[in-house]
Image (cartoon, rainbow, N blue to C red):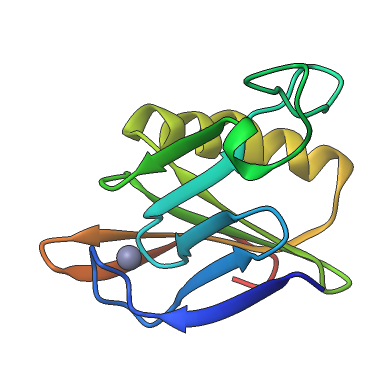
Amino acid sequence: MGSVSIDGICPRCESENYVENYHYSTHENYKMCYDCGYYTRVVIKKDENKNYILVDESKGLEFSNLIYEEFKNENPFGCFRIEYLGGNSEIGTLDTENDYNDFVSDFIPSELVSREIKEVIVSRLVENSIQKEVVFSLNP
Ligand SMILES: [Zn+2]
């Protein structure tokens, strides 16, 4: 397997709807809150062909020869959850209010043309509590 998921508490909104995922084999890790959208990701840098970029090309894949990159947003606008008919769902962070506006006015309408969506919810941290907005629902 090489990875483990730990349920934790979001350092930003204190939600328990928060997961940390560690990959032992690569030392990569992902942390995300499904309520406020907080995330950090530490991943190994790869080139456009998805090959690891090495510090020293003459050396192998040891950890000290890999380049780790951190991506994070500790104060995002919010988090979206799209539930598709049939059980699939997609979760992600909306980094800014612009991302939220594009999501609601462009992305969801275009998704609705090609895929059957059951429900779309945006949750965000507002004055120390999580507020959920139903952006779209098949059965309002
Ligand atoms: Zn949170």
